[in-house]
Image (cartoon, rainbow, N blue to C red; front, side, top):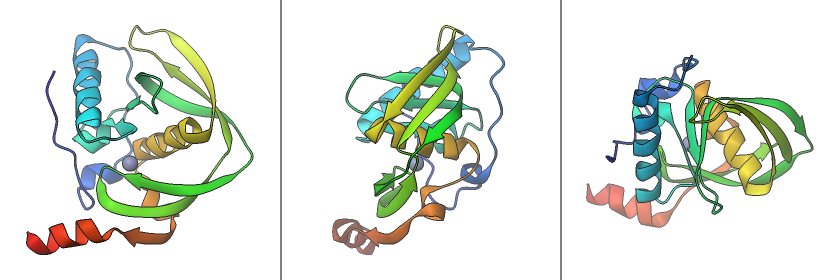
Amino acid sequence: MARLEIRKDGDPVLREKAKQVPKVTKRIQKLLNDMEETMYAADGVGLAAPQVGVSERVVVIDVGDGPLHLINPEIIEAQGRDIDSEGCLSFPGVYGYVERAARVKVSYMDRGNKEKRLEATGLLARALQHEIDHLDGILFVDKATQLETTGRETEQRQGD
Ligand code: ZN
């Protein structure tokens, strides 16, 4: 496994519409492993392939229940609404409140090429919507209100 470079705000790959993955190959499995390692190293709960410069529909998520690998994830049902604070590994130190569906049903392919579905609420529902947005070039700052940058990050930027 290898850690990948996380692309930051302003990188054009973050705005591209990512391609469908026809089949999970060895290359995609390696990408999943590397994305997982990168996500854990950065202390994130989710990472989408465009965030590591790969414009393909691949997502990893771990909200504390172990890693989920999702290929071609798609929201097939969404209910309710929920507003909560959100951040993104491509926007270090930036947080904002984003309205999301409270409950989603998602179809996807797993790393063994099996079609699967999952239903989620809470943080997992939020992470799924955030990461699937990445695959369409949509970033949380597009939807957020009350964007804030934490003081610690500001200090680090001033020190650059
Ligand atoms: Zn993000």
